[in-house]
Amino acid sequence: MAAQLSDLDYVTSLQARIKELEAENANLLSRLAHCYCSQVDKKLYGPNDKATEVTEQKESNMKLEENGKKKPGYDTKFMSHHNKRYVALKVMYFGKRFYGFSAEAQMEPNVESEIFKALERTRLLIGDKKESQYSRCGRTDKGVSSVGNSHGKWQDRMRHFCRAPQFNMFGLQSENYEHHRPGGGVIALYLRSKLKTSGVNNGNSGEIILEEQLDGELDYVRVINRELPNDIRVLGWCPVPVDFHARFSCLGREYRYFFWKENLNIKAMESAGTKFVGEHDFRNFCKMDAANVHTYVRRITMFEIYATDVRYDGNQLWVIKFRGRAFLWHQVRCMVAVLFLIGKGLESPDVIGMLLDTNKIPRKPQYIMASEVPLVLQSCDFENIKFMCSTDSGKMLHAHFVNECQSYQLQAAIFQEAILNCVPQLHDQSFSDQCLTPVRGSKKKTSYIPLMSRPTEPQHDNDILPGLSIPHYFTNGLLILVKLNPASYEERRAKLSS
Image (cartoon, rainbow, N blue to C red):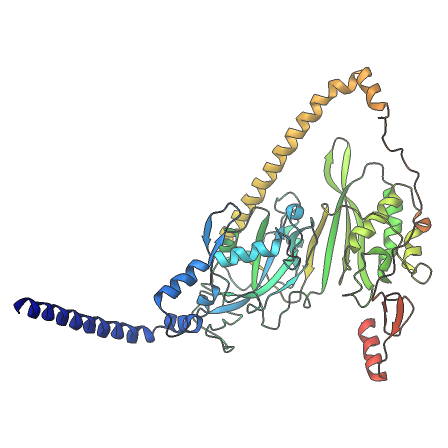
């Protein structure tokens, strides 16, 4: 009997302890209910989810790296209670190893994905890409680089911030620094802000920082660059109004193409290149993208070809420069390819004018584009944009670029040693004779076929016929005319002409 009472007392004590724990748990839940983090948790997991479910969610949020190691994912929704501001970032990148800038092609690696990975790791990104109101200017293709110069109006706003540093192609600070204005690739998006004072709230939990507030803000350049790979760098940042769009707010772009002079006829190339200036139909100087392009008319505002101070083994490095409001897909590489044919004496300078006359040549002759590696997006122009970079971040950028240049110089020195090792063999007559002897089965050098005698590109669906002002497209080889009311037709013509 005593043993039974002892067991009852033990059960009773356990029940009492359970009630105490339940009361303590309820008290803790009541206190947590006033915490903002718990409100976010309820939205994400639900009010009645168990702790084990939260643990499972965190475990499922683990990402596998390429080396097989697990790395915790970053749920940026937990950052939504932080203040934020709309920021434009000036970006440079060496594009040789990237499959272009955009992540939309889903080819890795690309510049855009690397930037967003850095923004997630630094906890600067609030929400996902769509919620950040992300826009970009200066999207480039595979292998193309951007040096990050942007042009805008300067207005000094902060004493402890300096102008974004300008670097030449070798990573050294430009000697003509005062002649450069602030901007390559430019992106705009909402980022977390350190400032407490807020501006107008857009309905989200995080408050928006006013554009004019700068003192005490995060050093975005330093923070982001710590997480970026060596061939991508943010050169400056600027607060921008919420209606700013990196692509549609851009007033113009400048591309530069580097090449070795060798035996090219520069005067002929310069004479021919000036014919690009003005408004023309560039369908014969681009890769057709009829599904997304409604007109092939573009305006080139400037063409220049000039020498640099860089020389190697008696050869000199030259630059071709184009400026315009917008460019077609692969337009610069196609224009440069034809200029090279002219410089080699294979084509007449008049071929530029002939290809621009789309009434006579409505389809592009087949030719190979120039290489993408020497192509650089030099600058993008904006109105009232001032990119800033702290003094410390500017020094770190300069040191980084100098280090990268020295690294590539070391690689060049190794190849130079390989060239020197070949010199004794080249002076050996028997070796030279062997090199000059054609290899059995090797292809014979084909004679050059002029552009005007080559096959043309095939007709694509949705192609636009030159000289036909009525909206139209091709489907399965049939010409389809689009019927518009007079008002829509005039509005379309006005938009195209502008």
